[in-house]
Length: 61
Image (cartoon, rainbow, N blue to C red; front, top):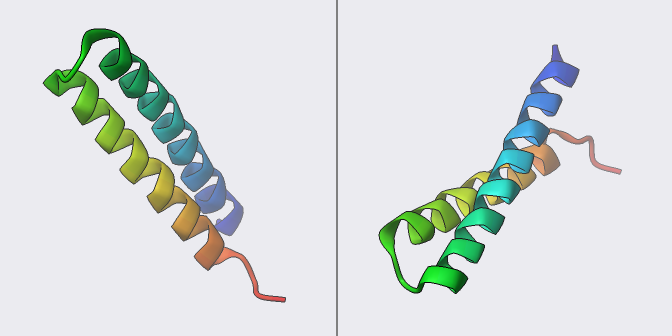
């Protein structure tokens, strides 16, 4: 069950990375528009949250 949870977190991080990249490209190409900034913000939150949760789930050395 723990492996499934870790893979779900990693998948959310990947989705966040893709959303942040797409939002960044959209903001870069079209200027300051809401859709690009929203996608960039949500992607960064997903990516950073997934990384933090993944690090908290790993055993410490």
